[in-house]
Length: 159
Image 1: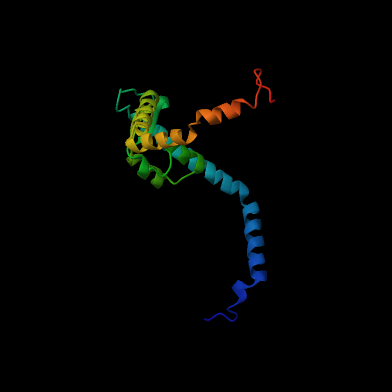
Image 2: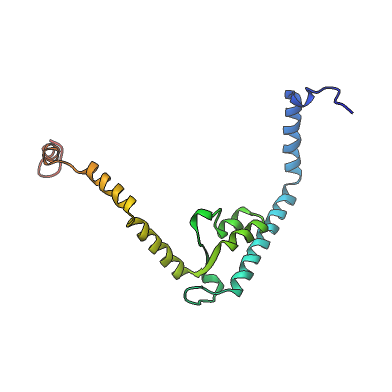
């Protein structure tokens, strides 16, 4: 059956009605929505805890679940951290997909990996070139330094 008034759903009255309806619905169902979100977050946290209790650090063999972290093999593939998954209530299917991209490391080995990754990046030719360019821009000529120092007396106060 065709619509009698095709413009009805475009009118401001209809949009206002929908806004009010949605606002009222969310207020009426607030407790139920919050309870459902808490259940979802608890299920994700339990799933992650269960996985950690079965695994160990791939570098050193540490087994305690409290010390284990998920480390992304390829940082470019990272959509979110596993800790964010619990906080934001990301679906369990997406959490499983993200965990497949990771290896398990203890906190110490994880910190060491990231330290080594940062140092490797800092030593890369592109970064070294950028640092040299910045240093060249920031270098002050002796004349500029003398002109700057003449503004102050020996105590560091402005003349």
